[in-house]
Length: 144
Image (cartoon, rainbow, N blue to C red; front, side):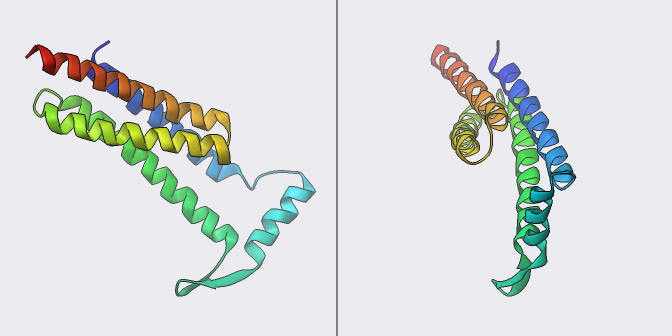
């Protein structure tokens, strides 16, 4: 598998991660358990001053969910764009892939601790694909 292909697969994995995240964001309040519904209601019921605005914990949660969806999409787009420019700028591509690899590793660990394994699997698989592409790029640049 080439570095370009592994990055394209990583981009698709992160895009699918984003789609799943958006679906979860749009449906997390659509539940029937009365205890969960009560907690959700309380998350939106009380508002607190924070950094010049007054918001509920639920509104903060919604904002974080949207920001995360945008970040996941950004990662997928960057992976796709970098995969197409490896030949033009190998050095810059390696730096970007290294940063994305580290970010995805920490993101995946965060998801393991604070969310759930299925979400973490997407990030960690994309991380592994990025590391694989880095190894392929180092082998390629060493031959030149």
